[in-house]
Image (tube, rainbow, N blue to C red; front, side, top):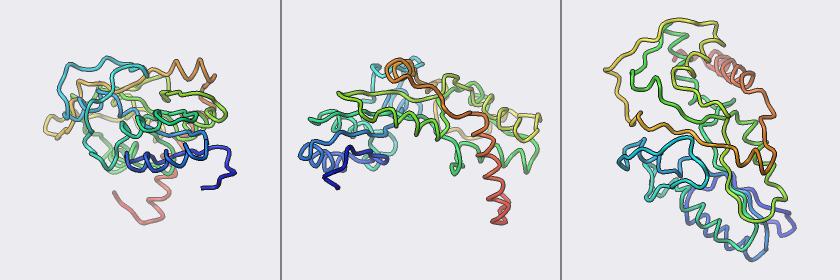
Amino acid sequence: MDSEADLVIDMIPYTEKEAIDLGGILNELKKPLIACSSVDVYRAYNILHRVSSPPYQKCPIKESDELRSRLSIEGKAYDKLHVEQQYLSLNVDVSIFRLPAIYGWPDQRRIKEYVDQIRNEGTVKMHPYDTKWRCSRALNENCAFAISLGIGHSGKHVYNVAEPIHHTEEEWCRIIGRHLHWDGEIVYDESIEINADANQDWFVDTQLIREELGYKEKYDCDEGLRRNIFNYLEAEQGSGGNS
């Protein structure tokens, strides 16, 4: 690590051991830290994935609300919870940004299922339990902008980052469809296997970062999604893909 650096930004804090190793260096060099965490640290995430049992966590979830008490489905290989604990124990300035489901090119995971069904089938199949489920999302460019606001911020801070509107899964599908000039049928199919408890929503409150850091979305979310979709389609066409 460059000892002349002004600060360290950890974009991929995966494991507790990595956090301990980096934390030791930061404490020695007295360098401030910005770390990208995830909203999966909240109890809702483990309920959603049936690692923990209800009662369900109320949404929107604030930074001070209950966190998970155990590892998530990813285990120790992706352990944001203990990473946060290690970083917040350091003797340097630390700002942690809990990020949501991020979309924006080159991401494909947030759009691929619906884009492919619309393009190939003309209809979308969805389990009825999934339709009303809500989660927090954010455009990648706005996440980057939020993180930049932590530069020069003294003390220990934790912020949720997400868009203020928490779309249901059906709404998200329809928004993607609108960009594809599609207003077709969503088929509700109970035979579709779902590996989550859709009774547990997973969206967060972002008032704190908006009040303390003056955050608001810098980049147009709808335009970012449109570019995401058409960059994906162009890449698929270029690769000869037919998902």
